[in-house]
Amino acid sequence: MAPSPTPKQLLDTFDHVVVLMLENRSFDNLLGKLYPEGAPAGKSYAGLQSGIFLNPVPKRANESDKYPDVGPLPAQDYFQPFPDPGEVYQHVNTQLWNQVDPDNIGVDESKMKDPYNIPEPTPSATMNGFVNDYQNTLIALDPTKYPDYANPDYEHYSVIMQTYSTNQVKVMSTLAKQFAVFDHWFCSVPSQTWCNRAFWHASTSGGRVINPLGEGGWSFSDWRDRVWSQGTIFDRLEAKKISWNVYAPLVLSSLTYLIHGLYLKYPFHLHGFSKFQNHIDEGKLPQYSFLEPKYFGQHNDQHPSSIGKGVIDYKTKIGSVILGEKLIYDVYNAIKNSDYQDNTLLIITHDEHGGCFDHIVPGKTVSPDNETNTEKSFDFQRLGVRVPMIMISSHIQPNTIMSDAFEHTSFISTLNKKWDTGFLTKRDPTSRTFESVFTLEKRASWPDIAAPNIPDSSDDAYQGDPLNDLQKSIIYGISQVVDQVKGSRIGPDILTHISTNAIAMAYLEAHKETLGIVDE
Image (cartoon, rainbow, N blue to C red; front, side, top):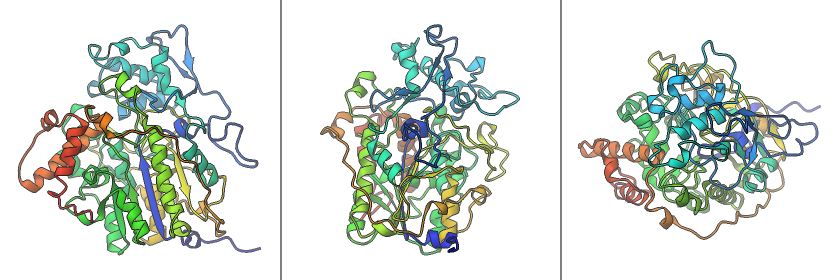
């Protein structure tokens, strides 16, 4: 009997790593129905194919007497859940434990009080508070602007339980079945985008659990002090002379560069998204590529639609989920139809769950920094909610299901095994590595996948849309970096001048040269 392959042998099956990280979707939301008839013979899958996953409707809710609970529902379109659910720490606590403290009912997240909807003493999470939290999110909206949500009924709050079928997300579903799906991959922080993306590359968010600008605050300087000083995987790759690039549709909208303060440090590693295909065609694909979706205009990040100018404006558009499907399709085919196919690992994942329903309890973990002065007094000893994770490689066999527990810092831990990059904090050494997803046997080909059917459209329909919270955080953050270069100071009132997608995109394009982004 041949000996089992070593981790090094398995990790040597690829030379290049490409990561596409999308936005704000839970595992159950996109992949819970991957195997509706049950997992392949001899395998298990932690989806929604069997079992009862009810979320009770809070007694305060309209129609709670008629609908005492809500189970998983079919997604009705590519916008749901709409409006954007709560995703910050306070909201996630309610989603996990089905508790809203009395003082936190019907109020904006910025006004929620300690202990931020966590039961005391704290039992194991129940994962049945998504309806409770979403109803609370809706009634906290300004009733003068959004009267439809002042007293939301079942039709409004039940959408948080909608999940997509394999026919609705055919690209993701096909890749998950034809290659590998991880059904216990968790984001690193039970909260938002900036923090979880920070963990992917730095194994810490510097004690922060809320995005800069979160909760109406202007804490970018605090983020800069706490997070920009942290070491990143990019620093380690540089030291090892391992090539890398970040690709973003608008180069000055790169969250990766903004989160880690890389604009002035590594200006020549940031490129527009089209350069990804060019570098493949020219044989210049780096050893590590990190791809970002489009956050502005016709955004393909799969982020749930913010309420913006109202329901009608968004309902007439395409929907971020199907646009994200097209992005995944394009990235997959760029590698599939190239000389890089057989020596590239492609990872498709999401930064955090974005408030979308999931039924698996997040596990415990270790604090990366042992900080005491952390935001919301969070101890960083529990993970965030489960997110989609698909891996594609010529050395991954069809219907591979990985059911061990992983989290975002598993990526750093695995790169360390492959390239000896070293650990970054106390978190990544404890994270399970994923080399067991590979086999030494090389498959003959990658399957052909049909392109999503998307109507002709462009950014034009989005130009007048107001900025959502994520877009605001990007614009304000970039303005701070620009000010640092110019030696000027612009406060948060910049967002009164940059109020729409069109103005924001023009601002980002105009200041590319200011920060020395060549993008050749």
